[in-house]
Length: 216
Image (cartoon, rainbow, N blue to C red; front, side):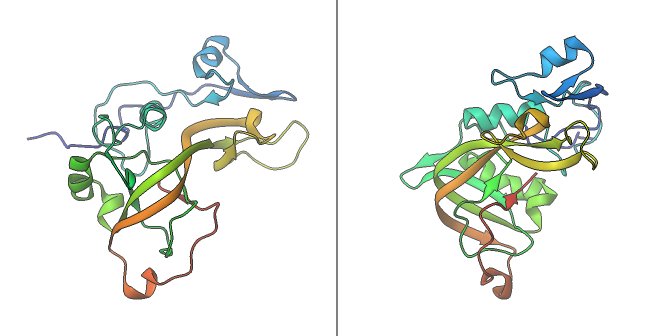
């Protein structure tokens, strides 16, 4: 029996999130274990989620592997094969699942999904359930790395619980209090190449607000 094929950024059930204890101080979040904390810090001091294990078991298409997503997003590599993403005069190639309401313009959309190469743009919708139900293919001329998405922790003494899935910009005062899972880029000067899976009514919906995040 052949093993299932999955995009490079897709985590497998054998790749577990490490149960690193998070401590919240007035200066921000840290891992209680100093070794975990050192491993989880990037060059800008942002704390990242840690994963261990091996790429075995089943692919989890509803998630993105923290390390591989960050690697491909920072290097403009294909989300599916980790080769350089496709470029032409219209910009870099992006393949995104449809939002709940399909916008008429994808200008300013924020996404945690890395770009793709030409070959994987054709095969990925057949492999990934998130794309199979509907997707947009874009050419993008500007894709600024604007922040991270992760679990935002309340400051000491503040009410509330940690908020997973929060987008925190690099210039935000909340940045020291987030445990990042994914890098986020904001797409500008976009051209829609194709739109698959949208009905006429949803395809004519009003544009989404700038802060909407697509994918991941």
